[in-house]
Image 1 (spheres, rainbow, N blue to C red):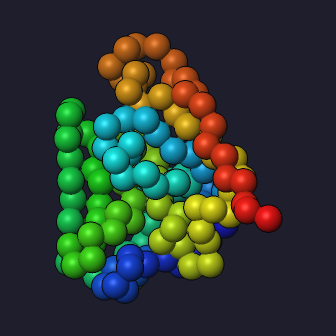
Image 2: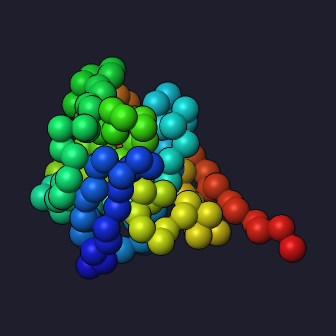
Length: 137
């Protein structure tokens, strides 16, 4: 279990998160919202995110079926985390909001096929590809 502190860009929202699988769960998604947002996320169990400051600054966004809840700071607009649609007992946390972590720390990030979501297709979740970061020399 990895416990990390995090915050939005302006610092209005501060939180602590327990990542059950550490950073072994990092991923991106191809659904319409995640594709536009572009965040790399890591997983936390329900109850694994504690908002320490600024809960009143968090805004929630829902779309399509409305089951996933996406949270972002109402002041700076940064996406901090969301409750997953496919497993509502899991939260995905924006790794860029975690102290000392960058999405570019991961040389390879699995990308899940959110366009063909298992809850829509009845098929198992599938991997759409891999996002790679190759630092310049």
